[in-house]
Length: 242
Image (tube, rainbow, N blue to C red; front, side, top):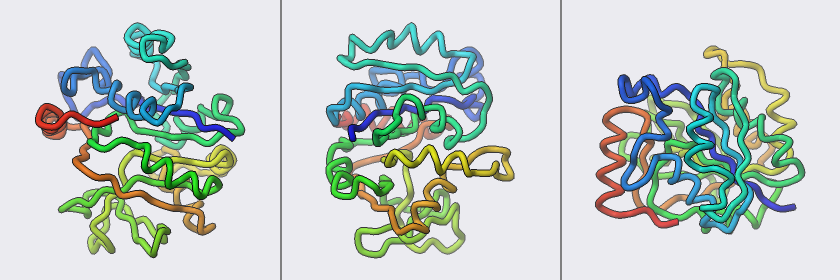
């Protein structure tokens, strides 16, 4: 059972206003690269060579023009189109043919963080049939999904809780075993009309099959004007390690 890399770079980026009027937010600059280079380089830094990029219809051509076959990055890139915004879990479901029989390292395209993913993958390799999530200690956990921990296991995840049970936010870095695609097929759309990654994670929680790694260094998403500026300043001060 090998492992495949998946970059989820869909979404309209509407919170970025004029910046995303003619381009996808994952093509905006963070440091010296387009944003999408960050998750891609994190995946390649683990030694994974097969990577799938999922994006919407409007800008898929731009991603292909930027990244091509992947040969400049010494990897093999595959592309899948998410026809409409159907949620992170739906986007991940498009990887079924690509990842069939393999585990998947999934990174959201707008997650910018300092530490490499290799230590997380090494920990997850101890439990190949578990899901594994990246966590980051944050000063304001109530803004995020917050993990409740017991030893090396995650025993609960609450979305934007009023009274967080820990200061550890769930970030957009996940490792899933091959059965994740069967789980996605059982999901019902949420109130937002999307298939939620939280529902996938809760499935593994209920089965007692979820572990975690706390990532060192900085982490931010880059989906708002403030967080995009913040991501750039972090990357300029201290380049991420891949």
